[in-house]
Amino acid sequence: MNPQFKVRAEDLAWMAGFFDGEGSIGISHPDPVGRPGTFGLQVRVSQIVKEPLIVLSAVWGGAIGIRDNGGFGSRRIFQWSLTGPRAGEFLRALLPYLVVKKADALLALEFLAVRPPRSGARLTEAEISKRLALRDALMANHRGELR
Image (tube, rainbow, N blue to C red; front, side, top):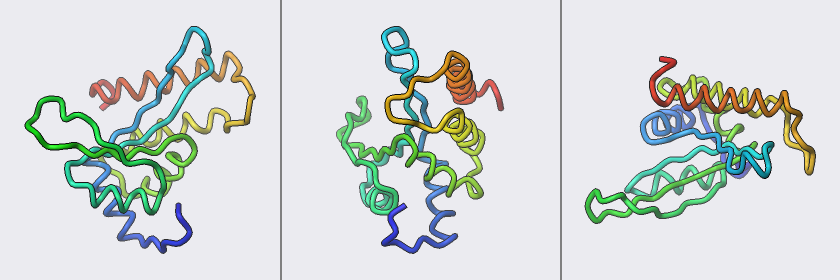
């Protein structure tokens, strides 16, 4: 979190409600063959109005991009994203206020806790298996299988 901002409980509650409605949590495993220990945690919020995303970016960092709207008219869709440990910091701060995405956030935080990232260190087979299981649980939760 940006130390320049004094974030109040009300601000975190607003962010959690906004994230519950417009956000997503994902765990990627981009190259399971060549680099089986490569994973990534990402949180995203997509929105046609950019201003709330500017607030999230100012407080938490991350990036705001524009993505194709997939054929739903001519509106641009802005997307804020935050990755890795900073995504975990964001989820930890919002956790007491999350409703819809609380279970996803808990899985994501457990994913980060498997082993804190160390530069150049490889994950063990057990750590890879645990992270894959957490990714699969998150995907199952997205499909409504764990609710």
